[in-house]
Image (cartoon, rainbow, N blue to C red; front, side, top):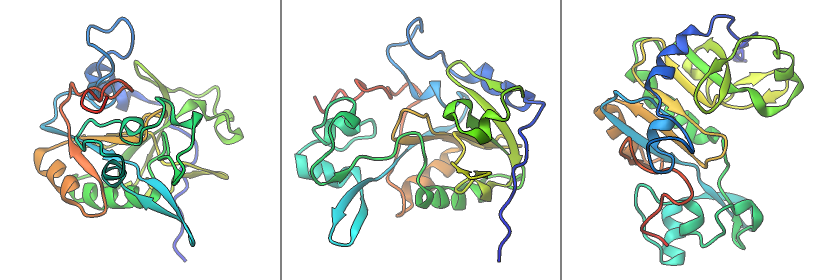
Amino acid sequence: MERRWDPGRPLLDVSAGDWLQQHLWTWGPGSNRQGFAVGCLVPEGFEAYARVLHPAWRQTGRGFEPVRWSLIASWTGRTVHPLMQFHRIANLPAFPGHRKPTWGMVPSEGKLPVAEGERLVAILRGQTATPDKCYLGLWEGYGVPELNAFAKLPRLMLPHRAYFLFLGPIDAVPSLTIGTFHHPPNLWWPEDRAWCVATEIDLSETYLAASEACVKRVIADPGLEAFAVPLDGRIDVDGDVINR
């Protein structure tokens, strides 16, 4: 039986994340940019960026099965493009939780699904020289006892969120477990900074900053619905200017 990696306690020294403080864009009102952009979540300075969409779920006679955004867009007659917003292509309110679709469930927000996480890890493992030394950032605000126990420990403070920081292997990402709390990291990168991945708690997609070759591999992977996006691409609810 394979032994699950134990993250233990968060790092007391979170300076490994200082580079992100210097390379993430300002988020929200007061920013000199319109809306929220990819550069608010993953750092500038990389060759390319990707947006990995979390699947929605269609109810069938056997339960639920994943369904891609592009298929939903074909049902509704909407346009598939890299910056499409789920509520727009699914004809739902801006905050889908206020109304469930008749065909199933909306994508998970703030949590990279296990299947997509495993596919992403399989690609990114070969795109870094330090796959066994990755920094795993978990948002501080989940309110579970396991994280509340770390209340007095240092956090990685970024412009938009604060994270407890762990150091572990890339293979721990899809099933990161602290006590009985199971949640993939919201922010993770290898020690050599070959790439960086972010899953914002309020979004139903995950973002990647990496080399152009790496991003091309992610986009081409049949197990992922992913698109290349610009660093200044809008990620907020009004960012889809095609599907109105």
